[in-house]
Image (cartoon, rainbow, N blue to C red; front, side, top):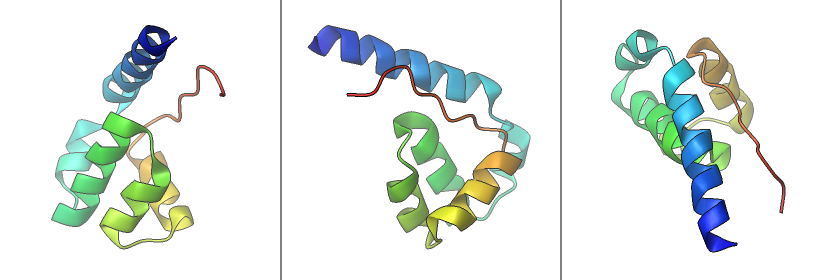
Length: 76
């Protein structure tokens, strides 16, 4: 089960990395850039929004502009 979760996490992360608009991300202010990268690695909107000092809705707007997909393989 643990191995399956690791594989799913890696797959989700790979998809987020592949589809992200890296040029857009690199042009962002430091906090927002770090938050977008955190989201790509973890998929955690809440932590990423807190890091950027934004609400979740504000962060989601930027995530969409950065073309980072939300990927959910399975729900626990």
